[in-house]
Structure formats: C-alpha cells, structure tokens
Length: 455
Image 1 (cartoon, rainbow, N blue to C red):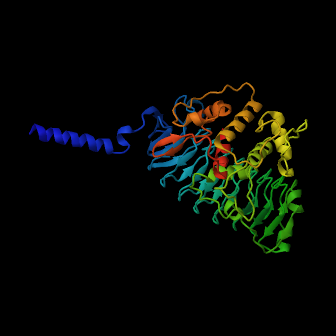
Image 2 (cartoon, rainbow, N blue to C red):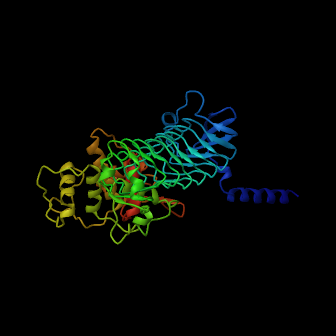
Image 3 (cartoon, helix red, strand yellow):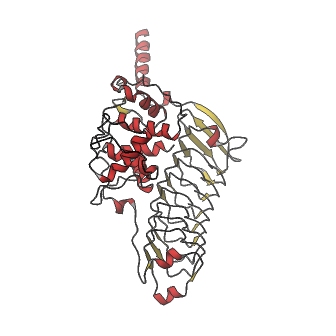
C-alpha cells in the first residue's frame, strides 16, 4: 500500500512538473479599483487586467499608469466591461490592448498620450470614437475601426504620426474638427457618402497626404482643413464639377485648391500593402517596426514594390537611417574614409564620422557595403545616444547570455546598454536566449530595433 501511495505521489509530481504555466504564474504586484464595479490588477510580467462589469474609469486614488508603472506592457480588458471612460488609460505605457466585444463605448481622451501603443482593434458594437480618444498615440501603426462606428470625434486621431492609413467605415456620417491633424504619415483618405462637412483643421499638417476622395454629400470644407498638406496632389470628388463649385471652402486651404481636381472619381486607398507586396500581416511581430520606420521616412522600400523584410542592411544603410533621423545634417569637416564610392551615403557617413557615431574599420576604411551585425548596430545606436546625451550613463549585464564572450571588446558596453534598454533582446533557441552578436540583422529586425530605440 505504501509503495502504491509513493508511486502515485511520484507520478503526481511528474505531472505537475510537466504542466505549463499555472504553477509559474506571474505574481500580482499592484491592484485597485477603476469604477464602481471594476477592479484592476498588475502582475510582474507587466500585464494589467481589468475585470468587472459596467464602465471602467481612470484608476481610483493617486494612481497614474505612466508615472507609477512605467514597465506596464499589456492591457487585458475582460468580458463584462461595457465602456472605457474618459481618461481611462491616458498616458498608459502599454504596447498592446485587448478590448472585448462587450465594450460599446470609448470616452474622451481614453487612450490619449499612450505613446507606446502599437495596434488597436475596436470591437463591433462601438458607434462613436470620442473626442481626443487616441490623441498623440505616436507609435500606433494600425487601427481597426468596425462598421458600426458612425462618428469620429474632434482630434480623435490627432498626432497619430505613424498611421499610414486610417480606414473610415462607410457608415460614418460625422467627423470632428482636427480629427486627423498632425497625422504626418497618412497617405490617402476617403470620405464616405453621408459626411456633410470636413471640419476645420481636419488634415492640418498631414504632410504626406497625396490623395483625398471627397463624397458629393460634403457641402462645406472648414478653415485650414488641408493646411500644411504639402504633398497633396489629387482631389477626387464623387460628384460633378458644378456640384463641387457649390461647396463652401473655408480660408487657408491653398493646398486643396492647388491640387489636381477629378470630378466623378474615386481615388486610390494607399496602405502599406499597396506600397509593398511583401509587407507582413498586421499581427506579425515585424509589422509595427516596419510601419513606424516607413511612416517616419527612416526606411524605404528596395524597389519593385518590395520592402524585403528578410533582407539585410549594410553599414551605410544604417548610418543613413540615423542621418535621416537627425534631419540630414551636413558635416563640417572632410571625411577621411577612402572607400566611399556612392553619393547616396557619402554625406551621411561624413556626418556620422564627425559626430563620433562611427569610427570605421580603420582610419581609412568604413566598409559601407558590409552587412550590419547585431553588435555593430548596437554600437552605432549607443554612440548616437551618447551623441544626443553625452551624460548618459551606460548600464547592463551580459553575463546571463551563454555567448556573451563572443561580443567584441568595442561592443561590450553598447550591447549591455542595448539589452538593458530593451532595444536589442536575445534570440531564443530551444528555450535558451542568445545574443548572437555576429549575426546579421534583417531589415525587419532593424526596423523593430529603431522603433524600440525611440523609447
């Protein structure tokens, strides 16, 4: 009998050892309330869970997500929550949020200032996106708006500067003033039939907007609606020229009047998928980084309508990205590298060398066509960060990585800093994380790293 009990106990221990997750669940590090019947809890993995019934509000007490919990990564709103109230997640540092189908309303400033939020899928049933709901979500690269939405509030997506496209459903009849102003990466917009007015400053400073389709239901265009749309080329109108002449166009819309006009026409809808045939899915890990770098004009395609996410970058290409990020400054001293043969990167390398961002293989050789390794990428980013902030204190420890000994001496501090900052993380192989300092970084990986580098 004792043997049987012992055997059962041993078997139970083995089963529990093999069971995933539950025994190793993250610890709850903070909790509280955020509404009359709503609670929140934050675990040690940085996951914030909101549960209960009714509308959630901003957290009770003196809790401020962005200040108190800077390592918060993900928000999971459980089924039963029916509304996200005013200021509920304002300045929350999460990168992702899961919104259940039970949610039917999103309040003013609900996600305003969530500067790390990358992708949002709004559930069916939501009818309105309130004023300033996603204001200044500067890293949001994808938004899914359901067909149930009929109104988009004032400045709802203002300064969502990484959105290349915003799909406005056909049922939308009201778009508030300034709804998309400051969306500097937006390439095209189509107003659905039923919208009667394009409010004041709706597209102000949408500098890369090239094509807009205006429905014949529109009777007025507000002041400065297209002010600062420097790249606007085509205006498509679904009605006739005589109908367009009856539309009241407010002041400060020279960019609109200066674009080519196309009556009885519908223009193209530009997305990252029309720009690049090999663009990964929005749910793919690589999408946010690529979208972020394309939106910021840090990276472009390789030609033939491809981005080539799995291709590699050369040292000259990475330096050019940093140079663009710095607004293409001119070097003040002659460059000593003698192997710079292409005009497209000469100015960038000259600036980077003078700024101390690169040092070259030796005094005369930069090796512009050499494929960038993870440790060289970390080194360039580290030196650029020191260039921007000379008082930056490096930190980090690579001892936990089995291949830390492969990191070159010149790259030790840079790799430690990049890893500690979450900019370059380990590559997992069979459950073991490796630095892979000598591996080449793909274009998709570099794009992701640059997005992380932005903080």
